[in-house]
Amino acid sequence: MGYIRDKINAKLPKAFDGKLADAVHSFSFSRSSGGSVDPVTGVPTGGTTVVVTGRGSFGSYEAHETDGDKIRITDTRLTALVTEVVDQSGNQVAPQTGDVITSEGVAYEVVNVSNTAGAIYSIQLRNS
Image (cartoon, rainbow, N blue to C red; front, side, top):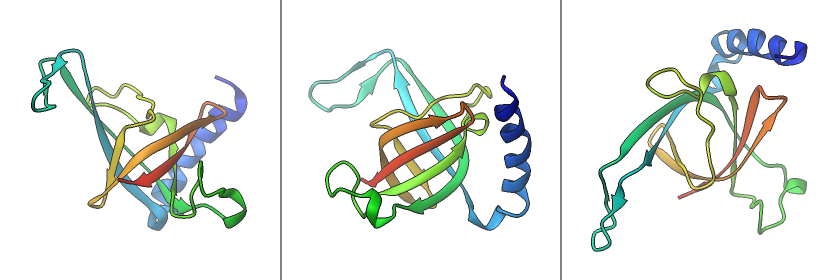
């Protein structure tokens, strides 16, 4: 890992536990792989489902960042640490477009994901 990434990965989790604790919320999503989808019910059959958890800070977009199409004023930005978005086995899992992230009873669809310096996900969410 690079020096900057190491610093971010060392300091931000501590800040999430301390000074930023009030702004940090847990979230989760699940993803199925393998198997097939029943064409009548639309329900996946077979395969495996991976439950992914993490924590991050939910915020809004500034008016100048929105265009009404790709980024809407009602979209939500989630900033999460790469090292904390993990499955049940502790493996890091990157959120993908189409995943549905749930936090505090609210479901959001992932619209876009970017990874800054290999340490932080900036995830664009839309109410689903």
